[in-house]
Length: 134
View 1 (cartoon, one colour):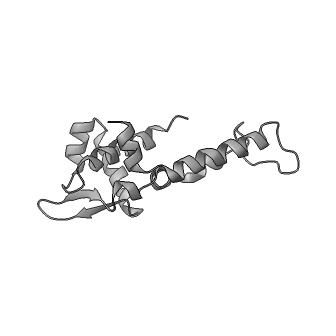
View 2 (cartoon, rainbow, N blue to C red):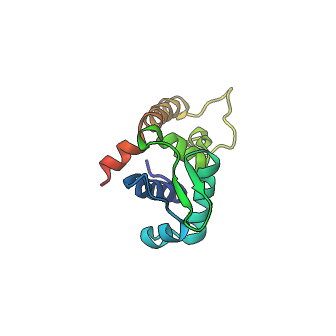
């Protein structure tokens, strides 16, 4: 499974922030260090803040930090914060609406695969992700 650019950038930002959960990070520095476009970085930090994954501190030396320990932030939450987890409920073959009375050949297989992917995303924490991608 490949994550979208938006989710990949969010994971990149949160992965970096998880390296040191005490210091405050600002959008400009994250942009410069990680190479994520500045406006994208600002938008992602805003979205992550609205969903309670990061907190902001205002003032001259303000910035962002993780709202909770990396072990308590799950990949499903991150995806939901920046794109909405409903991306996982879309039809695998591209139908706008699932024709419940006449399922396509992929319907049952996709439901099983999707549920397995969701389970992995809901049980894999940022801490697991960081450890595996250092």
